[in-house]
Image 1 (cartoon, rainbow, N blue to C red):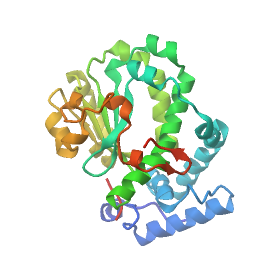
Image 2 (image 1 turned 120 degrees about the horizontal axis):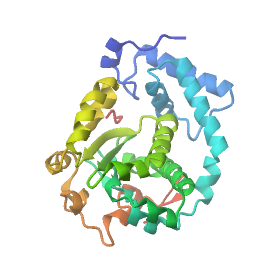
Image 3 (image 1 turned 45 degrees about the vertical axis):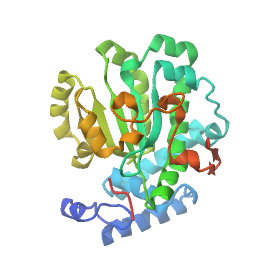
Image 4 (image 1 turned 30 degrees about the horizontal axis):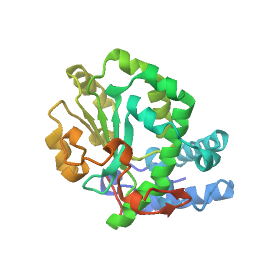
Length: 293
């Protein structure tokens, strides 16, 4: 087995399509062949960009990557991901949006889908009168699948390059320790699913309206993170608009966050973006050079 990529090589090669060292390419080829031999290779889902996301998540350590990948495939089978995607009816979506707004809306300047989560508006008591924790987790998984199969391919096609990641805006306005603790169970499960089963999907992560205490805690946590991951996370106070507008076209950013977009019926429910122009992709019906960031 080729050894894990060293730090010098990582600086030169990103581990993305078009930026692989000979050693990384060899590891990719061996990884692909091993999962084919094990009978867990799915030609539709497991293209090279997918395999490379798992490899990057485990620093091209083949043993660790294969375990992560196998655990993911086992989880997909146990969770019934394919059947869920085919049958899930999120009929309570509009009501959920009132009590826990989180949604995709257009793209940033790099063509990445923008995901917005307004955690300060969470009303857990009202939320669980219209839905359940189980259904929220199911919807999370369906949205991850839609990101992979609809949103990202639509963005890649529109901008003429491989786009693999999203841009997240997490709004902490109005968040208290109590309100966060009320959704901690969901946030913890969501984080585990994202890290373990949908790796390397974070392009940029803006945390806005961060209280001073949060910024202080972040200064302690940041050195513990991988440099690549830490560089993607930006902590901003209430004067966040100029930074967002450096990276997001004003016409794509909702008015509520200092932009110019005011979708009819509200940006939260519009699901506006290139994916809405794409019709049908990989079974999802939509309404209506490599990305290395």
